[in-house]
Image (cartoon, rainbow, N blue to C red; front, top):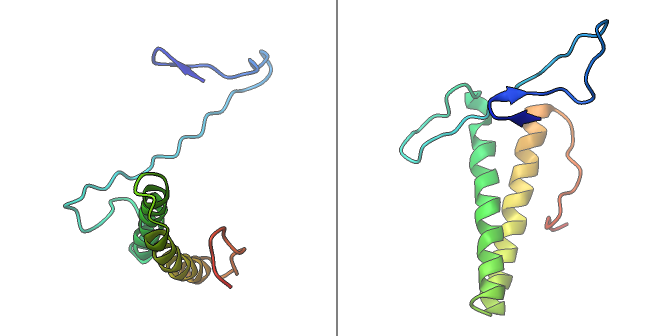
Length: 107
């Protein structure tokens, strides 16, 4: 837990134990950047596909709850199924292991 610029380990270690903190920095690409620093070039396509999935999920939610447009939501849902399938294939390519079926993926 971090409080006021200090990190506390819970439960507190005893005098015979060592505390260990691991930190993972997440890249923060800007919209005008063409690469993600500190991230493998071979995985950037997966980032783009993951972003497309989140955008389509946002749009589906907006179509249904704000615009109340079921037809547009259904169209976006079909696109989402295609993108999720592409994303799963890309993750499989990167990891060499088949991915479990994701929510929203069409079979």
